[in-house]
Amino acid sequence: MTDRLIGLSAFVGTVGLLFVTAVIVVDVVGRNFGAPLYGSQDLITMTMVLIVFGGMALCDRTGGHIVVDIFESAFPPALNRAIDIFSGLLGAVIFLAIAWTVFQSALLSQMLNLSTNLLRLPTAWFQFALCALSLVGALTMLLRAATLIAGGHATRRDPQ
Figure 1 (cartoon, rainbow, N blue to C red):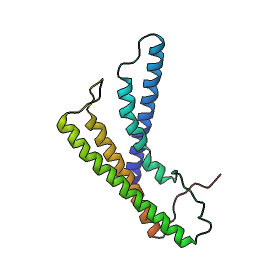
Figure 2: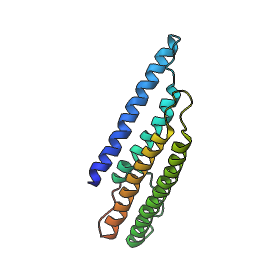
Figure 3: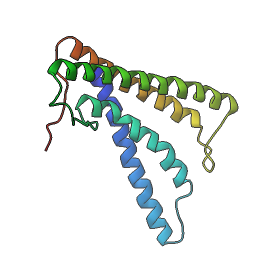
Figure 4: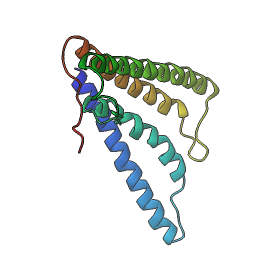
């Protein structure tokens, strides 16, 4: 179930990236012919939310986040494990806080009928999407911490 949520989250981010790329290409070509794409800034800005938060869960699952391990070799394995557990729990708390804050903001945006400047896209749609993607990211981090607590190992990329 979690892998499907992570896959869906990454798929949303991928589709968003392809969409933004297409919008930029159409806008640039249109500018060369004197007819830029109307509302491209609205489309790009709102879709960036999906791109960034869509990939967060997959990035955490595969160990793709930036890790500064200057002191890791000097610490005992138990302390490194505790630090990894703490970072997973802290990340989950941060993403839950993001989800809660954005959810409250989305409710306000919905109540005030806020929208983007040019295309009048409701901002609440994108805020609810950010909220859902943040929850998937928090779930992934919680599962990483739970795996470490249960005796598993953290997924990390080897330094190159």
